[in-house]
Image (cartoon, rainbow, N blue to C red; front, side):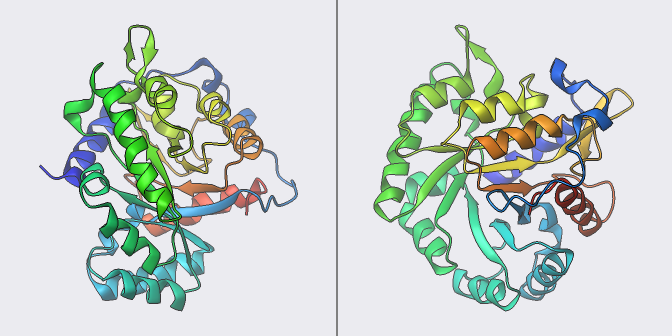
Length: 294
């Protein structure tokens, strides 16, 4: 099974699984959202990971039309993924044509570790300098695997640093399993080299794993240039993905944490949309701009 298929399988299971809810997130949604009228904050920009609209990126024409829509909705920054239908140089031109900036890109651990130069060259082609590993291989998701993965990520990050790039890791929920009293995420943080490894906190998956997204963002201040923003709402007994600001997560604390911890980009991601994905990303950016993010 490919890395992307594994990730999709994990995401599908996550949408229907049981929820370990942190106490800070069970307050009324209206009390947990930033208030209207705050001055725009240029230090924490809104972005979109293209994975959210992956079903509309199958061909070059699809990518061109979709990037045009993304720009018209109001996004200026994107995180690259799911654009295999075009070459890096062609993607660079399509981004330029639509006034979009690549500020991050996802890659698999297999590609980052086995063929880093290919990833470096592709990202240089479309003007991006920050690369994120999107998923930890299943065989490493255990007590022995986390320290080994932390070491491997640091070694890979050093190669990206030599090329003038920064390198990060994106969490899901399994990183919050504890091993001898420490979560896998803690092991990755403490046993990796901060010079070569940053983290992309996914707020939804932290909460799904029983953690406090704001607390983890604070913990990683200076090592968390990007945060994934997606909301959580209950459908019967199960949590599902929702547009940012439309669910029950404590965005007041999360946005405060982003602003105080050096986060450069708050990146909208919605793994599964309950409506047209372009409507979903429009609603998310509308709510985030309402809070003063830009």
